[in-house]
Length: 150
Image (cartoon, rainbow, N blue to C red):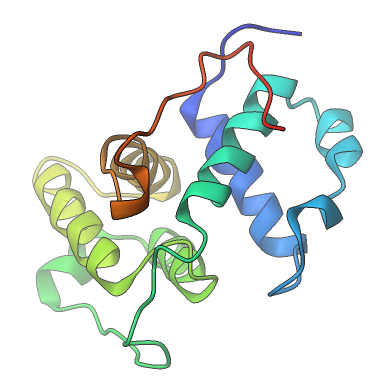
């Protein structure tokens, strides 16, 4: 088992979880063997699962069902793939509408120098999730890479 993990790889695990987990189903339904077979470490899987647990229910979003349209600057900066990934996290209720707005603001700041594609939006989302505590995370403790979620 490795004692470190890449935040981008944790985002890849999150993407996998979002794709395979049926809405409302328990996290125990996620096949972690498939993730390990794909080369993800126990630490990366544990970190992703802990992020899902922490954010579950924290995005009580009254804007569910609304669709956000990018304005001109955002359209020029974000690739369609990056926008699609951001919307997928929102639709799966991992990110609230407010989270999406905050992430878009950060993407625009980064996009002043270059286009924001999938790797960049993953890094922005990861940094946002990692460093922005929700009300339920007031006493949050980060996984150090060699710990497991029980």
